[in-house]
Amino acid sequence: MATRRLYYDDSFEKEFTARVVSCDPALILASPEAKAPAWEVILDSTAFYPTSGGQPHDSGKLGDANVFDVRDDGEEIVHLVDQPIETGEVQGCINWPRRFDHMQQHTGQHLLSAMFQERFGLPTVSFHLGAEICTIDLRGPEPTEEILEGAERASNKIIFEDRPVNVRYGTADQLTQIGVRKEVDREGILRAIEIEAADLQPCGGTHVKRTGQIGTLLVRRCTKVRQDWRVEFLCGGRAERVARHDFVRLRQAADKLGCAPEEVVGAAERALSERDANFKSHRVALERLAKAEATLALQSAPPGPHGLQIIARVVEDSSGEYLGFFAGKIAESEKTIALLFAKYGGHVLFAQHPSAGKEMSALLKQVLEKIGGKGGGTRDFARGRLDDSLQAESALSWAKELLSAG
Image (tube, rainbow, N blue to C red):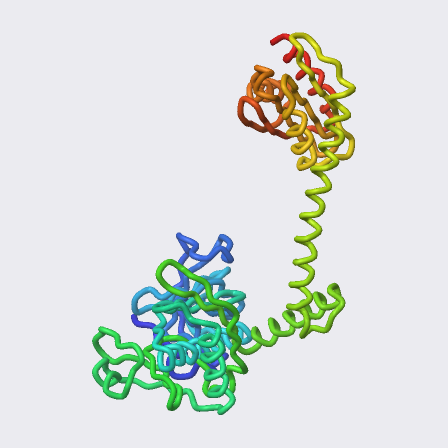
């Protein structure tokens, strides 16, 4: 028995009475929200919208039962509920805030898609109404910032004009003759949503009655998705909340940068420029310090067996970057080897001048296998990190022992 879809003619119907056709235990739960046990209920008519066409399902109640999911099963609508419902009449109640939010987003999507296609020749190939954000995928060249803003402004102009949104019925040929935006190859009578003098689109979803009920439309950003361009947008209450949240974050950023909100971009650019300059200066200073300390270390370290100079240290307060400079400077001198560990952070650096004739990567591997850690490198330079930086002294002793044995 086909379920009569009350939302087709009146998306604002919040409560309804229907007859329970069947109520059976659910074998497969189709929604992560649903928890076993659950039952599948079929009614002779329903105002509950099933997941379809990019729009999520409604939620609400059937009698005392909570409706977790609604599925389109051919001509029947299946309601997934958390307790059995007796046959006979039942009162249905739609979760109205969820429904109205979906209506705002869906009608807003029709309008935005129409503006992209009519004004900029960018057709919509898919639509998704998410819990937080909505998206449409556009086909064609990349929409510029001017195009995104232009489609948004054109949409909001029509929203503010509070134009009627009507439900129209007709065959595919009839809808084509009166200017449908996207033709469909389907037989029989089709349902279409008409935004007066703006759009006509076949659709089975729920929609507002006037564009003013969309509230406002906000385009967020555009990203490349395979061959298409994904545009994020929000309507109504979502747009209001996000716009407010964005301003709060902008004001917080302005406070941190010590400027007015409208000066944030310039202040951020200056801060980044200063950061880059300081970073370069810091690197230069680190290299100079590493060179000076490497010179002192080599002067104070007497040659060992075979004329090798081994600089082996556990450094208290040094970054991995500094250890790299220090090891590199030491390894510039003939027959030198650097075995360096950072006490805090667990960084490990082994380096040698090629004339030293050892294998730094093999040595590091042996140390890490015994002490624990990860790393790798080449014959002359190897870098790693200990699992436990407190084992730095033990690791250093083991490395020196392995080196002398080799």
